[in-house]
Image 1 (cartoon, rainbow, N blue to C red):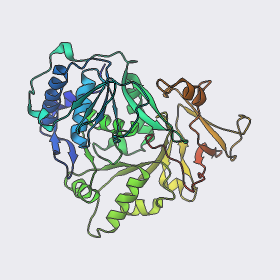
Image 2 (image 1 turned 90 degrees about the vertical axis):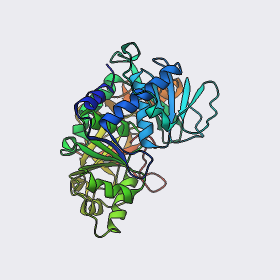
Image 3 (image 1 turned 45 degrees about the vertical axis):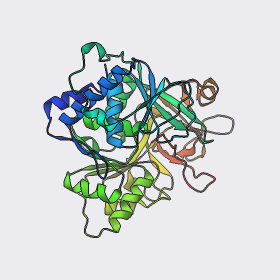
Image 4 (image 1 turned 90 degrees about the horizontal axis):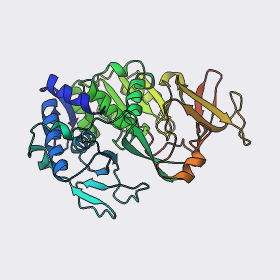
Length: 391
């Protein structure tokens, strides 16, 4: 199996329809036909460069559409990818190379300099021998994740894990979002949820709008009839403030999702009034497990509420001795799931600390209500901790 193959079915079935849009960027809009041709052309480049299945390559490309095309091309060839928006990162795992849009000194590996002209070099079909048909439990994607102490680690996702997560999005994103074919994604592709939204949208032949300039993005949402917005709490605040300052703008959104607590960045009332009343909030742990979500109106007045724990996930709150606490008591949060990872890649010490006896310990403090609503405690800095790469 290969998690990007359904995209090429859509390229054949609906070639003229919109696939990707990034207002204000060089590519701007891309149809499914152009996406398929461009990925083929980029694949030829990587084949000529000698990339091989199971190689690990970091992708450091600012333009979101070119970044996506490179990710799809590498994944189609069986290369394991990891994305970052940082150029100063000391990679916590071994990589075979980097694909970058600017000169990048990468010790111990290769640097391939990406060029937008790649997309028109050679769009002929790829020979079957180069197309990767990986086993379900083979790794296809890596993600950076930050812990509470600021330490960065890497989690590895297999084809099966990603497929399972795409299926579970309908539980996480709320009742309406899975039925919206056109989505605006404010989250970066460096995040597990951002990557999953990308695949889920293109799998079903939908259109994905990515944001750089909020004002231009809001205009595009109207032009292309976008119905769904997935954003970080800070991104949601930016959209809300921008709409408040554009009195004649109107969005026809049917669903909005924000990964994380909405306080103190904004009140859910403002976002629901300005963007869409159907706002869902949720919590995704640092191991990429979709843990809890709920309609934002049910969290009103409950400081730190991130959602009801999802089916297939167990959350416990522990006291200082590691014993489970009854509902209503604050303590250390631990998570067990049939869908979670079991280690930090190539870091045994942090794995032994964070993954124990089938549980993941994200470093969060919080409590559970009697109805299994998860409430995260405020950090010492006065806000709610959010994993830098986790949502």
